[in-house]
Length: 230
Image (cartoon, rainbow, N blue to C red; front, side):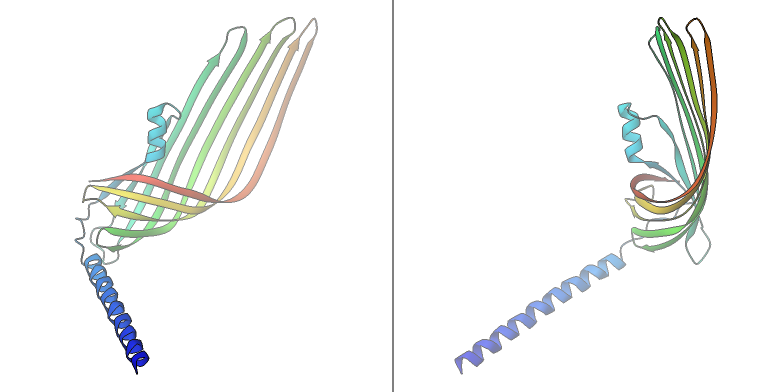
């Protein structure tokens, strides 16, 4: 009899605890669903935080941002995304052994963004297309007993087609934190050119051009961005 009573009390206690947890979760879910939705604004400018930190530290000089234009009068929330990025550098090393490296990367893209929002949280996803232009040149000269000059250059164009997805948390109607990732297919076409000139009593000249084309599929890492809404 005592064992049955003890078992009954344990079951009753377990049921009461389960009911309390269920009630607390329901209240949390209700607060989440009823969280105030920030005022929707027309534009969002997003800056990737890791690139901003590297630029401040001098490790990387990458300029650009993503502009997102929100729909304002449609029942389904959506947006059009525009991206612009550019990187350039020109470095000279030494005077006897001349080493010069110059790099130029330009990128632009456009995408569609479908949005589902619950209070301050927003899930967004959609396709995008972009094009990149890359150019690099390396010049090296050794003016010792044997004069040698090497010039390498690469010109390339990438066409990107991808699907992007992410989560956006609105701090307020003006600021948001954005986590975005995606899968991208890239068609790459580039020309590699190398010119070698050697003069040590005789002249040797070599000019070689190699063309490359390939298709790759890549998944991007998670990127954290700061959104400014206006």
